Length: 307
Image 1: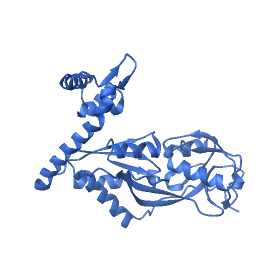
Image 2: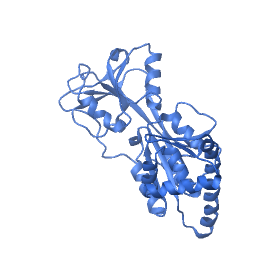
Image 3: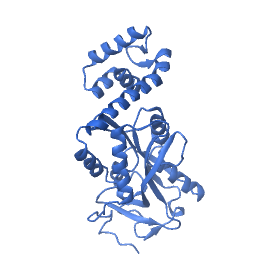
Image 4: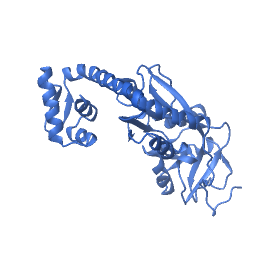
């Protein structure tokens, strides 16, 4: 069933094999054996694509529930031995530099070295990740939520103010603060539609009745600064999500402050496995006692002074 779920989620035997660290022929043979046992084909295969069959779609939630029950049995043993194992699948769809994710995962790994952490940078947007969490396809999501559906549980762990990020030499670099109106009709580098940060930015411009054009959409916010520096557009991001870059200027917004939250999201109707619960506690401690960010340099340019 693990092989079946991997193929169902990847819609590719090749990617499923890579995910499971197996050869493709082994994954194919395992799925064929399962199909023989069930008496039905679970996938519609062609030379170019793999899709779930009607039987496969019906089997999918039951397979997830069966594996969750198996994990619960393992957790019962874990309670007796104290050794955590298994895999925690974490989806990233936000400006993760707002929280020190490598440090947090390092803390978790040192405490629970037997747990495998699968970190996925998703292109599905917040709603897609929330749906995957509700279905049990993922264990934890790091998102910038703008809605709170009943199918998920949301715990905010950080919140960062948004700044205007400009390339050096931009006409607005000389200003200490910049209003949304001053950015009217400007080209922007931003996240794709459906991501929390993009939704927040779009809502702010809509409320201010200011038009803008997103000239470039990037999934990885950490790479956005390079595109801003090359003149493809200006940015509206938390500065912590940009990193230490030269050739850029960050300016505060004039008017009401704009913030992006970061939240840990889990499925509301599924009991988290023991390893997931342990990771959630690490995130919870970060929310209660965030580490100081001393030594973090803001994005600025010595060549430009605010007026």
